[in-house]
Amino acid sequence: MTNVPVMALFLMKLRTPVSVLRFIDRFKGGRLERVALWAKTLLSDYGDVIVEAGKDMRKHPVRSSFLLAGITGAVYAYKTNPSYQSFQQALLHSSNDLLQLSNAIRNPTSDSHVQSLIGHMNDGTLRYTTLGVVSIVWTGDFHKDCNVYAAQCKYLKPQWLSFHERVADVGFCGRWLVLDQKMADFDVNSDEFSL
Image (tube, rainbow, N blue to C red; front, side, top):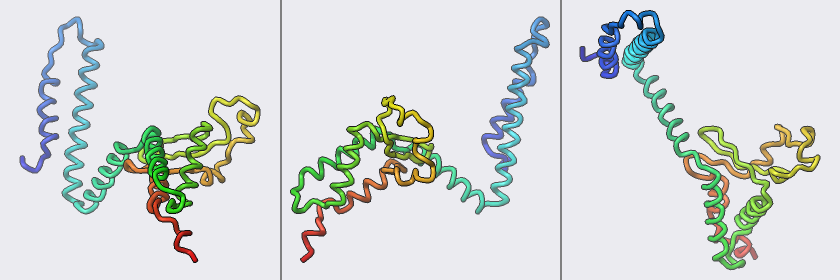
């Protein structure tokens, strides 16, 4: 009895009340009996799946641990997937960090990247797309409300082969990777040390 998972025991206990339901004659063959039969079948199937999964996990513990680690990692990445508002906050925070430095010690790479992103944000050409576990911020050619012909023509829209050139940032596990990389040494001007 100890080899059976707890959830399977719980589901086995649930089978008994559903199976002993007695229906009044006027409900026999009706919608209520079909719903009860469907629920009983569903619980039975899930109970069997849990029992089989427990047996398989005991049979292949290494494979099971990798699978559980992968599922846990995917769920964590999904739950901590950053939003567009978090990108805007990180961008404004980076801009404020750069504004507190003089031009002599400000990193030109960090400054040009942040100024470019702020320009696109002010123009309304930054786009946000989430893929569940990862988010992508990319630049478009036109504002999303622009209705000129060039913005509507499907032949002039960005092509998939050149999409990687438009990616401005990638968000994963609550962080914006490109922005963090560009802001790593934002207070170190490499031109200051060149002779």
